[in-house]
Length: 438
Image 1 (cartoon, rainbow, N blue to C red):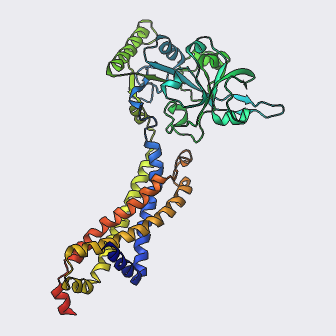
Image 2 (cartoon, helix red, strand yellow):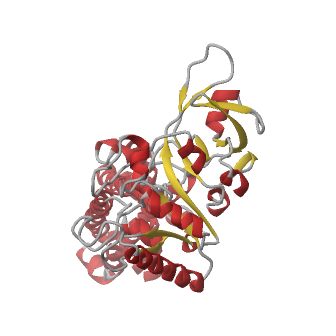
């Protein structure tokens, strides 16, 4: 019977090409607007490490005092050097790492080649297993390498291609800022969005992943300056990078892995005890004011999902609803105009369920047409998303099979829902009245 209903639907749509085109356009534009915006919202609002985010925590310590950070009681979003090093020395987490942004120059192998400006981070060796960073070759470095400030490096596959031409180059030497480093590992493709381990410097998003990782203390020892954000309550008393380390400026991200509620409670207590120790030593003159948020809570606190993205999604959904309301009106006019045909079918024995099936099939065909048009318009929308959203979010809008399937599915389901009321009205047509009037 479905084939019969499909044939009737195609005949009906061909009889009213103008009305059919209007409905397909309404559905196509509404779905395309929603899916284009959703493609960005999906990327910015997703959990970047869902299997582990509940175990990853970001400690915040108030080293500035009440009201010194934006006028509220929230502590700074990052740590200064003294506090970050104290947390690393005490090591109360399962795994942990201080993190800061660097931008060293890398000299490719071979004579006459120009330096490559790389972006990366100074981290501790536990950074890699803590965040489940994938490796193509080799691995991260050891705790002993951290302790001895070893000249080792982990590089991205992209930098591996630029410097060595690709392949397994673990153990080879790479020139970073004029000094030789042994390659400990080469990363597989890794650029989580949001960039949860460095929200302060990146805002959460970047189209390019990190190129190089160096041991934190090694980078400090060779005076590899911070390339990220510095927020200071007071200006450093000493000049240069050393002055930054001796100041109360915050510029170091920190992440800790804690297994279970008990570990979280103990770490929270440790932070408060540490702050009290600083108070007793005269460094702090205020009561402990610390925070320990897990990764999802921290991303929410940092407002990583931009407000304009949420607004754009709501506007697009509103447009889809308007398009569906218009489609309801068009379907109602189209179906009731065929009251005579419906009356004859009912008089010949067609049940109301058969009328439902016939007209919902017709609505479904319109939905498929709108879905196909929506696919094309979604592709255009993704290419032009930079016209309505911030440039740093543009690269996140991607078309993949899941998005394509969802586009067609929403178009068909939305059109079927829009067709329920017009179909209900059509099924209530009284055969006797139609036969008498005709």
